[in-house]
Amino acid sequence: MTTNARKTNYDRRGKKKIVLFFPTPAFGHYRIELALAIAVIAAPLEGKYDLRLIDERVTPDYEQEVLKHLDDAVCVGISSITGYQIKRGIDMARKVRAINPEVPIVWGGYHPSLFPEQCCESTACDIVCVGQGDVTFQEIVASLTAGNAPENVQGCAYWTPAGTVVNEPRPLTNINDVLPAPFHLLDVNRAIELNQKTNHESIRTTEFHSSQGCPGKCGYCADAQLYQRHWTGLEAERVVNEIEQLVKTYKLDQVNFSDANFFANQNRVKAICEGFIERQLNIRWVASARPDTFHRYKPEVLELIRQAGCKRVIVGAESASEPVLELICKGAAAEDHLKSAQVCREYGIGGTFTFITGFPHAAGTPQQETTQDLLDFIQKVKQIQPDIRTKIFVFTPYPGTPLYDLSVKYGMAEPKSLKEWADYNPATLMESQWVEPWERKMIEKVNGFYFPFAYPDSNMQKSLAHGAKKWAYKLMHCLALARVKSGFYSLPIEWVLFKTFKKGTFEPIA
Image (cartoon, rainbow, N blue to C red):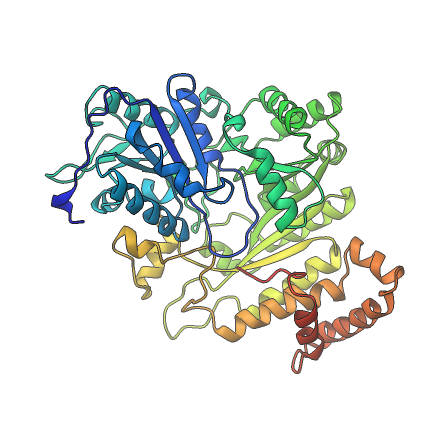
């Protein structure tokens, strides 16, 4: 379909349905996290329109569920981050166009917010919600049902035959003024059951979003671009009330806070923990923290965090090299990572420390932190607390960030259309001009296999002490520890055998 052949009709008077589609975010096998992005923008419209929230990963016959509601649809909304989710969104948009080319297609999420004009140039998109979408989308719907293009709606861009129109930006809304996400419009129970089946989860877990933005200025993160380093969190009492309701409704064992920086405000965290304890929720929870923030919490608050059920803290360490940390504007030092690991040990809180390798550098210049440098530092973390999991991701430039611009400067090819961005996947990119294939294999082998066996966590220690396989585990532990201490990883026969017979038991890098 050419641009001139578009048949989009912004006059949607008399239409009653809103179809919101959440495409699969990444290729391959990943844990299902609830599509809260489409739930939040649906909240202000509940009771006014017939809302259909469809998740490609969860909704049975998702394609038919989208297409059968088009005749009476005000619009079809598609949520997307950069990469594979765009590919799946474009695929659905084409099917929508084939059935009913007049229905406006509205895109929202990180990527459309960063490239609204480029998105509207694609026939897969007519309107873009830029940034926060709850108020903007509500006004877009109101404009369409009044028979008009969204010409007076702040925070949106839209296609016209004369070209794309980009309206004035919408000021950020305090998250406390945003309505609670209507979880009942999502198939929460099915998502939980699918995770239990495909990810072998023994407990009932779901996600909750309690804050937005982050005060950090990390050069690889799009949050700083979208929220201008502005952090706002839901009031503690509201968090406790909503979590309590979710626990009772869905019989939850665990809540994963999907915030970029849950621990940004110590007083709020303290009040939330006190609320969990006072109401005897008896749940486990997981949340993200900056390494320079978490270890500075007061001892009494750290003890409250433990008592309130914090199972694991996800720490974005990223690097142990001071030049790299300065390059990415992390605002933290390697010593902060080690201190956070010590806090996890002292208070019995699990940790997942994430690292990134392959940051951009000019051709012909050496890396400021080699793969071996990073592995050596992770070994120090493991020696402090074996229960800490470590993940290493290959750096992928995310649009809208300073390191993306630096990557382009150093020779990265820049996608020029929505379709090209569909093949650019930060979650599963398998090639990088700054990371060699052998380095990827080394990371998978050492961090994904040898470190866990050399420094066994609590669960593996049980396997080493009891059970029919304890001698096999002890042998593997001795071999791994010898490998790690000597740095000799050639002829890794035990690793090859383990991968062959225990597929899926270790976690490769993304």
